[in-house]
Length: 241
Image (cartoon, rainbow, N blue to C red; front, side):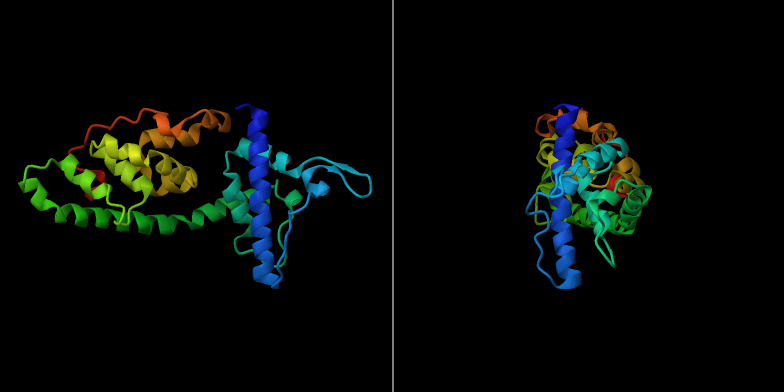
């Protein structure tokens, strides 16, 4: 996928997400059911307006700007509406340091919750593995026990957590099941996950955050995009200490 295709894809996503959140904001704050974005808006979408003035696409400009800053377009727009009072943000005001700082603050708000969830998942994993003690007595290996636990989708564990534990415990088949969802989860807030999870983030997943949008577009997460072979198991598992 070329650079222009990436810009077009980002621009379409930005417009769609902005329209959706603006309409929701209008309903929640003004009690009015709006359909902002249903029709073309030359001032923002580009083209000629009713007064004959020609405009460039604000969304494409914003897309290029976010690509340069390596920021998720969907989450960037979400950050602009989170806790917004007074009036919704106008699209042509969002390529700014203020909007970028609002996004970084938005990401920072997630850190305490990510810490809580990581701790809860570690406790859940430990409990579930302990419940399988009888399987070890029947000759099951540690990898088989972890595989049994991780594939039980009724247990409240995220895709990234399942993938990371599967890689760590030498369960490649299980890792394959959650690779794509794990990558998507991590890329939704890479800075926050790096801050909270640190070295618990598998290197092959963390590497995705260092790719440019062009490189990401050529990665097939379904077909082992990076080295996803299980790492050698440490003497003491990081997730169950």
